[in-house]
Image (cartoon, rainbow, N blue to C red; front, side):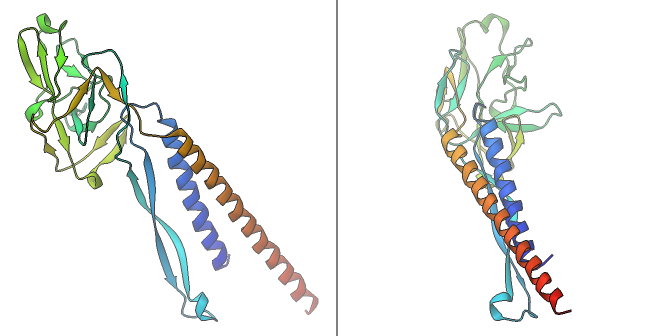
Length: 246
């Protein structure tokens, strides 16, 4: 396989990676709080000092270096549940993972567990100020509200405050199921926290944009395959011509 084939293979691998990310975005267009992802590539230049011409001494390949997520907010989607919240601005809700650790999410579906703890739709406990769960006494469970600063109140008054944590977005990594891993966050104060209750944040994926991206990726792949076939035809023709002189 010559250098041109390796370059085309590098390009096709990058296209496959882009298609995988676009497909995942489309699959999560209805996932609450999902952030659209985008792959990141950089150029890798290989030096060929023994090339016959100067123009062929540097060969560029595509190197996959990871992906980033689009931090743009999704739209507010009313649910009718007064406990559901959307973060109006940057930040994430803190939740307790099954192993006792902490993960973060923008999906604001909130419910009360049988033991009174506030939790996500998946049952992970939502953490309040200082990383502590918020427990709702049985007599308060039928008349709850969430204020803009995250304070959860019942008929007798405040019961706790939902914490919102902000990070350098470069340190936030998706872990699946609408959850993220992150390090070195800062918990917002009550005056900094902005929540909208009665609904959740929808995915920020735009189906038309992703569909267009997928069509462009397909066309680019078809072009790359056509170039590969042209190179194969050129090699075959060269070999046949050389064979006539042997």
